[in-house]
Image (cartoon, rainbow, N blue to C red; front, side):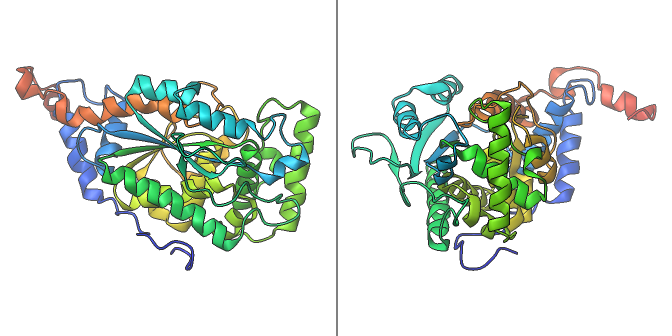
Length: 358
């Protein structure tokens, strides 16, 4: 059950009805293809139908951004101002995530929940700023209980707005210098793993610098010993991660397909799942990041294997955006692929069933 006092929206995701799976699997066997010849694409079609039946046509990319106090410890080469600069670039159609959105027909919304910069009112950036960056979690909690609640509520509201506008797929993305350190600390705390197992080089650290990053996380875990999902989020999380947690809970509760990206978004999904286990049923794992520890987070989430394995580690939601064409295609299979009867083709499924081969 969810912890009280943090989240006032609908908590429990719609339970997937087991009997529906058999119906959708049988429907796929009626299609004019060799049974099971679509492999994991066919499995994806069934999983999508269990979340939301019918073709998916209206994806929205919600990109949440925030700065991180832990950057004071030298865990990244990237200067803090890059977060604001990238947000402005995304809002103007720049960057990889914006390109992927344009090519994929995906609406993009950039949301400031904690950037250490005040954007002009005329900029296409949605303002839900909680604070100008989190605190340095090596010495104190990254955020207060009230701040965590506010960030989660921002994610919930942005998700609800997208759903009200007709969205049926949400692709979460993030921007925040230092957020892989935050995500790795979350994963280490929730998975009870040494930080070295779940911490990558981020923006190109050397081996020695990576050791320093791991040491910072290891020390912070002794400072913050709370291991409840929301306690971990308060202690280590970025505001963008908290917003994604709220967004995932809201999307799952409303039966919307959720495509998750790399380490920061997956860490948020892990927290959301610990709050509401039924969230898992709505998740589509887009890709296997090259970042250390992503495999362990995906394993803990318990979803089917990720759709792509392209050694990506950019973030921004780009891995999930790259997977969208496959998700879109799979969502059409049960409705738009012709059946044996419609195509006037001999039913190979019945032949195999008659011979006991299916």
